[in-house]
Image (cartoon, rainbow, N blue to C red; front, side):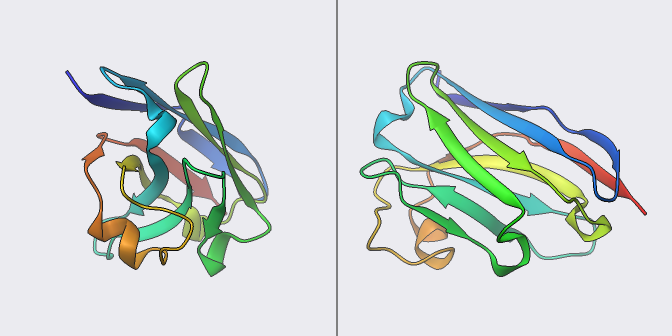
Length: 129
């Protein structure tokens, strides 16, 4: 069974930090680009950032550059999202997702959406002001 499971969400004050994890089961993440998407009620889905499988290239939405960092640990079959300097606007359900055919020559988030294959249910992040 192919599955992604997010964890690490919670309630934090503005300026605080959270570390989210995305663990894969039923397959290896070695050959997948892994990204994080977020969604809040009444808002469109937003591609936050991703990391490629081939060379570890990273791509970030302008709204999170300098604050969020994505990394992967293939030995643990897990991708991490370190979120610092959190803002109330970061509030949402954070989903991790895999796109096997996405590579460093592709655009983000357009091509990541195009190649999206698997995603989890998400973990809630709430940032209070």
